Image 1: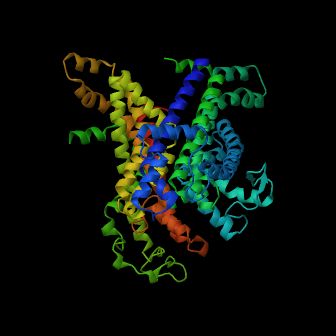
Image 2: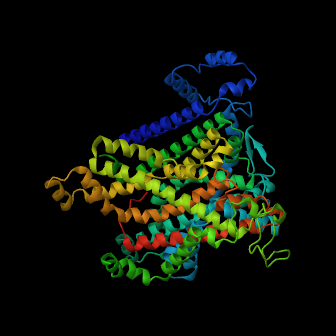
Image 3: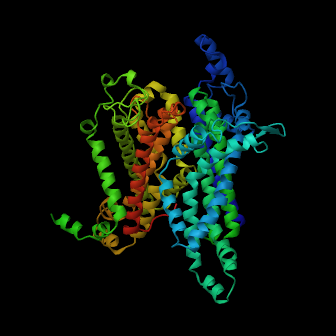
Length: 325
Length: 305
């Protein structure tokens, strides 16, 4: 087990090194820190002096190690537009994205588990068939179309729910702007989180159904039936517990993908989170902010993936044995 | 002729004829593809020719609504282009990028998978490490990020000119690992079979064994994932264009058309978003349904990613 954890952590560090190298290469080839600092109206000679002072004429690897060292200390450069440390800008936007992801995860769990179990237990009922058909169609609908449809129906035509921004937020602990504690904030969360969950739901419903059906066919479930156990006990305690393993892994992987889709959802809803900030930074050519975003998102993926793998290794011994060659 | 007879008696055709969902989705896909290829003949207007449209016609509603114009069946978009023609050209762009990107993905992935699986050893662990690293980052993030970088590097104007080849490269490079893993898995299954050993014994060199003997036997699984990959590539292209990182509005794909319509949805011009959106969903749905059907029929041992 110990060796397994070490191996996963080494792999995680490797991935982070590659991401940081890509980030550095981008900053090296696209951004011009001198322009960011002094603007366009400076003579080439003066520019050269500033380049020397900033160490931009140093060999490539010295610059990379400096970038890496700074990144480890949490210094990801200054944002050209905000005139603040890039990490600070990203962290101020992170709560909005995280709340969206949390809400979406809650919807995912609350909807997909009951529907998936129901469709597995009663595969022939019309409700299950409807759920399966809906999830087939659901895969084919891009998230921004769901979002636009929801905005048009509930925001424009019916005028029930707000479709723009985060609404009223409350500040907690000095930096976390939360929309969880006001009605206005919560109502702003509804449409974005429904549209974000719409892309993940079909996958989870199908996955839970498939796993559950497979397990209902196994010997130990047949044995549980033979013992005359209560139906609910067999379904929810004996069978469901074992469908959770693959579901947890997929959920971990999907959490990363969900971050990619937040960029789309946030654009449609003008949600002031990290994804929205990313697109604004592209429009403003704010290279250092983009690189910082890449590193932060990379850290999130790697940490989530590693933690999920390790937890999975604890729960399922087969993984860590299969991992050793 | 011989190949045709073999196809006629194949299991593939037999199960196709018995599956109404497959027949319907295949026909819809065929019609859409033919319309795309014949776009300049079928579409009422050539939307790339600026002399055929007029800003005065902008936001004309569909013909059955009040204020509709008979020359524009589905209405016009924000620039006064006939929406139906723009959609046909848009679908053509989406399809071109989707297929192009998948060909690139397959090319990279098959090469990596073949070398990795057949040659093995250090090369294998090196290539698989790279695949793992790219696999751990969602492809959409890779695509969004690379396109943003290209846009900053080239500038918006230059990027718009080069959009089609750039998008093919971006989507192609961001999603190849699945091919590499699938091909590697089937190569590992094939390479110890007797026919490979026989080929080796009679002294055929390893390149020929790899490309002429093993590769054809891995193509079933490649075909199955390719259908799903085309759908995902088209979806990625739509997402990138919707974010403004893809096709420019002068040569819109379905995604950029939806993006431009979304800005006008609050003023009531729903059709600019609605019709391209529906077309995109139908197109994706038929490809996905065909992909599901192919997977069930051919039933290869796929790598579960």
